[in-house]
Length: 355
Image 1 (cartoon, one colour):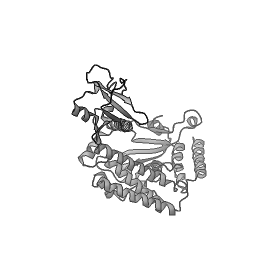
Image 2: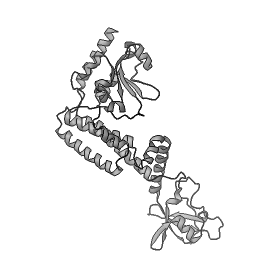
Image 3: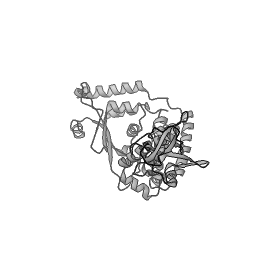
Image 4: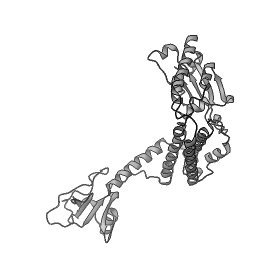
């Protein structure tokens, strides 16, 4: 079922402008996002054709089925709560039955701390990850295990590559044997005559383990080698994460981040602070304020006017305030599920009897 079909059949219960234009955070280049709520035809609802959500290909127009919408409200989902409290001048259409959801404050609760502030906290963590990726870019050529090998040298250690260079040796003529009771430590031998009696240090470029050899009895090691296997494993994970991020990142937003010389996604950070402020308002005032009065401050964040460290400290302070507000909040602990179910049944009965 498409959005046009929903409208043609008169199934829309609510429709509004959402996103940056609802938040009063839009700029001349901002898109216009639309969200809404619909009710499935009776035949679809009582059959196997339940559809929880309908959207356009770009996902900037999204409609939730009334059952799914109320289910998300009961989970204190920020997106659906924002729709429920959309300012009147941003509402494009509202069916009379939709107003039943405003009869009582059954959906606002202390649970919003976890959904609004909790999500914001996860975005701060994400921002830290982005900061780390931008500050520490990884080379496209993946390192092999030899880059994580070190040998004893003097009273300390040096990298294997440096040791081979100093001694003018080739890793292909090296041989390793495991040293008992010493994790990832090996005796390192060398075939001075280059007769191929040892296997070298790695079998192939993408090997994940060093290669062992058989060593003639009585032959003494040149030194001992340590393979930092844990370090190599972490590097492989970081390498995969970094290049997956490069492949999936929004290039326009990334370019904007670099041009601003800010090591974080400024737009994402703006919405993080919006959610933190909304969490404070819900817990402190019992209100969901969609249209932001702090537009200038939030747009300053979006435009990269703050340093990364400064924003992280501001966020830390707000999270602390939210925790304090949570402790003294008079809101109910969780949404009133019983009342929510009654209203949902009432809406379906009214619409299905009419239709």
